[in-house]
Amino acid sequence: MPSRPIFARLRRHLAVTALGVGALAFTAIPVDAQDRIRWRVPIAFPSALPALGDNMPWVAEQLAAATDGRIEFRVVEPGEMVPALELSEAVGQGQIQAGYNWLGYDQGRIPASPLFSAVPFGMEPWEYIAWWKHGGGQTLAEEIYGAINVMPLFCGITGPETAGWFKAPIESVEDLRGLRIRFAGLGGQVIASLGASVSLIPGGEIFQSLERGVIDGAEFALPIVDQRLGFHRVAPYNLFPGWHQPFTAFHFIVNLDTWNALSSADQALIRLACQAGVMNNLADSEGLQGEVIAGFPDIGVTAGVLPEEVLRELQAATEIVLAEQAAADADFARVFESQREFSAMYRYWKELGYLPRDF
Image (cartoon, rainbow, N blue to C red; front, top):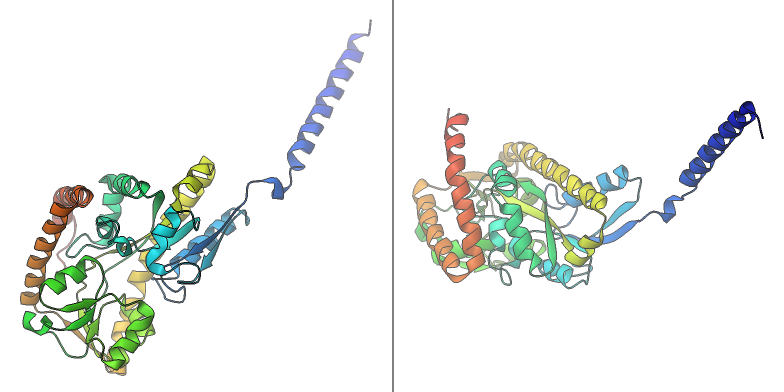
């Protein structure tokens, strides 16, 4: 029978050996054997456009850095894989795994979608963020988009757009009647109800349409984006405020089957990256506009403000359009009511907590 010292030495030897084998087993797993995520991600707007198209590339860079390249999203420019207006449909059908979209483009298939992307005279960005998290917005979006096999992740938001670029100032509602204009989403329905002739022209075609006289005015995005596209060269009146889009939200959309197949850890990583994307996008949209507007006189642009009378008429028309949409679609009514209820409660904080805007 071995002595106690021998048993002690044997136990120490076995313990060291076990630790060594365990360490080898851990370090021997190559990175290539881990689950990699390699998705091509089409986006709705060109990545060269600041605050509008460059946010998803930023999110992709952060994910790649945080995972040492294990999660890699290859951003694909609009139209290279699928038409920009068909991103959600392509994701839901599994033609592509994911995309970065402005959900308002889905209005023809999902009537409630504009409420998740831009609402005339609606929430400001921080209120929308709060509604998404605390007012049921995320749950509603996941239910409605789940019906077409899509998981929507809130991934970006900007402040208000401009009210549009025009060849002549808008001084009354009469100036809108018969006006040929590019407009999108619910705002397009509102301005059409007041007599404008509205068309949804892709961003890359707006300049040519203005230049050729096909349209008399256009709304598209933020001043820095619109100037990059050259609208000021053919329509020198840039009007404010952005009544039709006080916020513009963007979503990273993933095929629901693909999303459900991910580990909970990878789902959490992607959600975190999108939350960072919201911060990044809002910071850029707020931080880059002042310098552009300050430079308007140097390039012959007049920054004008719509008269209150015009804004009040647009607001009244908005109420009619929203009520009609709610009456026609149950999901629209659910989301619309959710936003109204949240805004009514949020108003207690908004009116007391912040200084008056003209203080």
